[in-house]
Length: 188
Image (cartoon, rainbow, N blue to C red; front, side):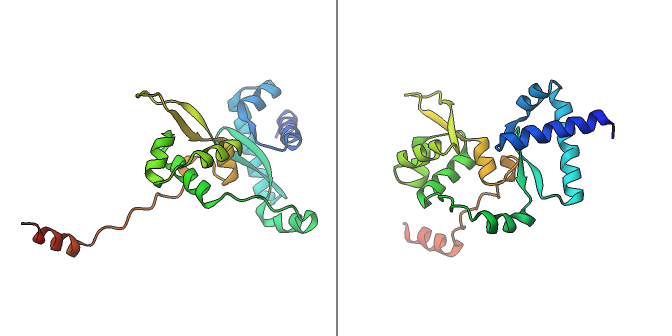
């Protein structure tokens, strides 16, 4: 490893440490005055070093953002020291709304309500206030309703690198063939 490469990794560490939250790779590259591909390569090198040495922190990637985070192996020690205030969890309604947006995005409020079967104005607003979803434009239909999608904050909150990390969508249980046959036989 050249001293210039080591310096680049140190510069990345310093920025991510001070930022404290996820930083867009393009902003990191701009601050370092290097290309995004060079930035990605240096980040990969840091990730590999941290993993090999089982350092107390790691670099997480959320879409096009990166962040320093505590290695889960050591998080218990940090919790015991800091005893953080418990994070406010999402309500069941908000979680259901978020799931619909995550799997069907971009999606309108009406489409979410049709799937959930209930009004969801409050849940959508709450998720937007938390930065987990955002407006993704307007649907090209009558009334031009707002489309919603998840954000990089959503990926960070759930520890995902991208939407492909979502678990497979559950399939509805298939109707029993015996019940269908009986119904068909009763219809003249």
